[in-house]
Length: 376
Image 1 (cartoon, one colour):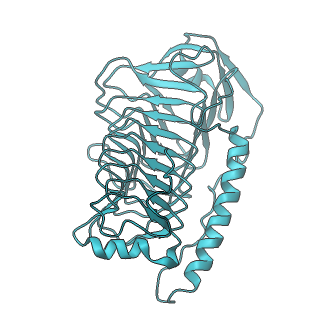
Image 2 (cartoon, one colour; image 1 turned 30 degrees about the vertical axis):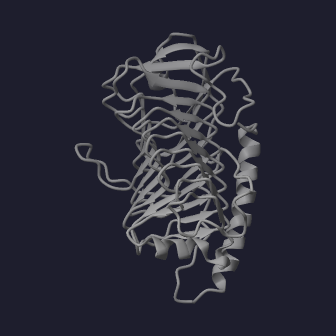
């Protein structure tokens, strides 16, 4: 895997890349019919990093102490420094806070700076029928930052997600979130988030964005400024990233690979997905279900996926621009494959498509089969 930058550099790079890609995309769609939908540049979150930092209070937690007691005792906007060690989970966060592991290592890998056995990490485990941490701020405006942790179950069966955002602005970074294949690792049901530089492993879904009421949970999500996923490794899940009804999910520079189902699955949702590596997923690279919200894919590498690069019913709204699509079992799996293939292979899109197996009737565009398809 490629080397990662620190979080500040990654964010600067992503914002610059994002602006450039959107400018290119907007210029390309401006030449299309004025009747067609246009992509509008979204805000990069409603809250700046320091907008709600109203004091300089800090606290420290020794290895093995109660994190929940520290959270309960901390005034709003406190920074809690956590010593590396073992901790128990089932945390509830209702006030703005920074929960940061001291002496976090600088990772040379894309993704997490914290693994499950790292000496500089704080390992938080939880009983299988409990959530590791729920962020449910009393007021919608406020920030929670979780940095440098390894989150995971004690056993081999989970009956709850690991990290749940109900309300507030969550920064989840430099961490490893590992769960079992029975429930999602991270569920974003409300608020806003920036999920960056993490390893997200082993769940029913790696990251699930839900803009809908959850059965039995009584929560109706509001998207606010949206959810940003940046420079994460999302692998060994059933599905890597699942979007339910969201139109404000923005994913950049992620590696989404070796999942047992789809890399990205979108159910009646939209969003913007750029410069991701989506590869070696067992059911396919992308699944786009019935929707009219125009998910947009720009400059991604979609390669070596089983079944197909793209699985989609005919007539679903979507945009594909300047993607590299190669080495998949087939280009598309669809009830009307010619329609989708023509959309992807249209020279105006700038997609480069080649070596997508004998199942694709139009597997070549702009390259020969002898050209190398990059691995993820």
